[in-house]
Image (cartoon, rainbow, N blue to C red; front, side):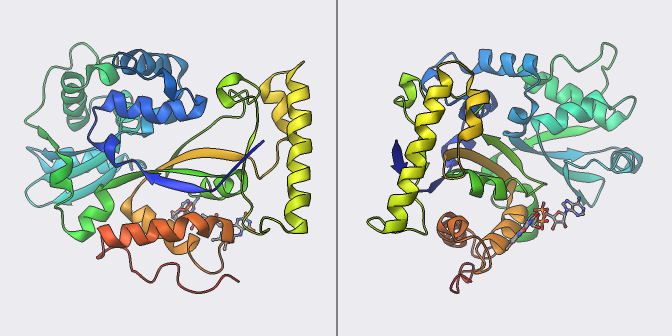
Length: 319
Ligand SMILES: Cc1cc2nc3c(=O)[nH]c(=O)nc-3n(C[C@H](O)[C@H](O)[C@H](O)COP(=O)(O)OP(=O)(O)OC[C@H]3O[C@@H](n4cnc5c(N)ncnc54)[C@H](O)[C@@H]3O)c2cc1C
């Protein structure tokens, strides 16, 4: 068995990559198959995920569009659909800022019917990102109906005023935590997640070193009696898990894996959601094991965006 410390990483590098690379890097967390990434692997991976309808993978790439409509009614029609997973900001002169994931845009275009703005979005996306959108646009939808659409570079999003920045700037963070903490993270419903799958990952395999990895328990210092007991329990779980793998699948054997099991989870959300998450999850009332990662993350976000993240997050002793 291996014992590792909890950690987090902000996935800045991915924001600079093309959408397929972005999607692949996040999607492979589920299978822990990052070793298979090479120069030609992103497109086949995306096609496979589309075919499997592993839809949450397509929540992991988000972009912002500046939309100029010719008529107010085009914008009103979009709002009338009450799109839940689009970040929309209406601006003067029939303008719109729209930020959404590939998934949200795919589902919008799919359900779009005759709406002129949605048809124009479909055509724009098909031309710009055929890998993700070519299958959706119906023949005959050839008009952009006077709608002008421009993809906003991330650097331009980063220059938006604070209120718009919070809505339209998304951030992906990969956490290495125990399964109890990851279960708390996924309670944040407006966010997107991808998580290492205990159904697909066979920890008895060579690529996992033939062992289970656990997160060092915050509550029991190494050398204490409690730590020794915890270690014994983990060793027993691992032994039985590996024994079960001899005759059953990982999805069956995982039923004996405990909360302390290490998991990797990517949480992707806009800065407004990160404000909410970090306010709750750095508070002294939050789980101390959660605070191990959220307090330093909040400090890093306060350094980057002091107007959005107060330096006071995480202050105070745990209850
Ligand atoms: C200290 C602490 C202790 C906790 N203890 C427990 C516990 O014992 N048991 C337990 O089950 N959970 C517990 N939770 C989880 C908690 O109840 C929330 O589910 C979790 O913190 C997610 O936050 P949220 O509900 O504010 O919203 P999120 O899911 O993060 O959503 C963000 C915002 O979207 C809106 N929203 C999202 N979905 C809905 C909806 N369906 N209806 C209305 N508005 C919505 C709300 O405005 C919400 O604030 C605990 C959380 C904390 C921080």
